[in-house]
Length: 127
Image (tube, rainbow, N blue to C red; front, side, top):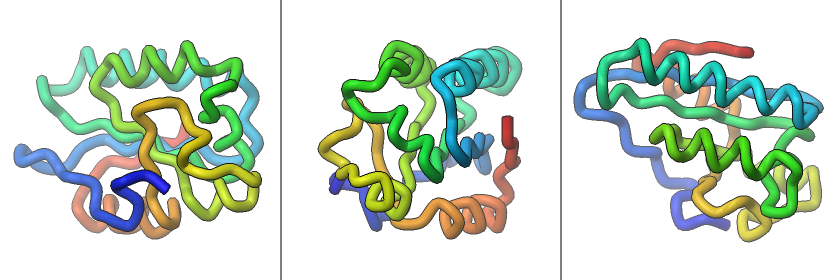
């Protein structure tokens, strides 16, 4: 488990941010579209706006350190985007937090995290 699992992810002091939800059986090409979306959002939103990508379901396998999507993940992280994996989905996929690409944190349940962020006023996008 990551050091942040179970702990609330810090929220930007300037207010709510953008939450991108990637769910289901993702293909590497699908995950590759997320960096384009995050890069476009980063360029258009105010500087320092918080952006999170939450991955839920079988697609968490693409977050593993040996994934063909590692380069895309690294690119997203360089844009100051937080990538979070659902711990429930990791367990279902037979993975642990230690199997993830460096810099990816976990949330106990993606659905609860999504609800909390929406209650905090975050914008929700599903690519």
